[in-house]
Length: 360
Ligand SMILES: *Cc1c(COP(=O)(O)O)cnc(C)c1O
Image 1 (cartoon, rainbow, N blue to C red):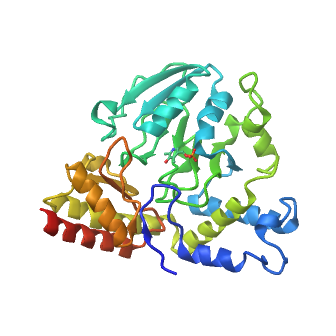
Image 2: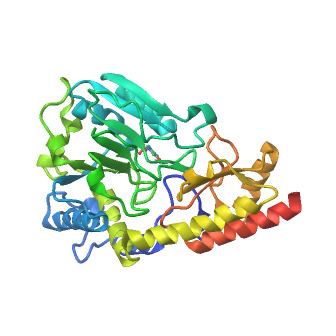
């Protein structure tokens, strides 16, 4: 068995320890005689799994008691509709569009009410985060929406926007649990788990209790009402049970690493190895404004599409996989999530140096 260094943007690398433990428990989960995949979601054993997962996440993120944690399905994209359907009391919302995911959320919300694009960085291929200190927030906005880490473009909000008292909703799919956050600053903080936590399909929604009401848009399907899932502790219907079990293991792994402050330090160290090289390279260059650089997703280019393709191909042969950039940016992108070991980034930079010497 040879595992590669997997720089995929998502689904992405998971901690090897977690995968091994899951493999050991595959046929017989702790003496149950069955896999977690095969057991009732109403069983005592599963109840312990989902309760512990929630408790560990609450501890990791220091989630206040007036927030609910929901384990839902449909990925992050389902939330693009669920958020306006549940939160648009005035049918008005403000969106800050800093990439494809924020744009998709903005377009989807437009089906349900008046959406205002109050800031955007599309003019420069989303390569920066606009100044959000004094935006024209709408008087009657039900919420202000951001995508906090832009997976495709490699930018990250280093400071939250000034929402002038309005509820902040944030998609943190690609920076989930990568550093400490102050949950109390958000109305909703949510993310698909396949970037930094677990298997695709699960989305975790952390929502302030006062936002969970029966007063949703007419016609909102039962399955898309936060209240239904909150009242049933994410067990209204069969949840993505196996996926939640893996997320729970990753939470325990994160606690063992020292929690989110330790994770942040590790992520900063890893990202610096790559960014420092990009800043000194004669061949490669980063595509993002320095102060807005993501710790998780690092896009870079040579400026020559043929050379980019050659790099991606030769890197793969060297055991460094999924480095091709998103089609809208071109070039390369290295996603260096929590579970990417430091050695992976070191190996990548060594390979880039060698490639530079051979091709420049
Ligand atoms: C990947 C991603 C999504 C989409 O997630 P799905 O689970 O495929 O719906 C949304 N937002 C961000 C920031 C992402 O990185």
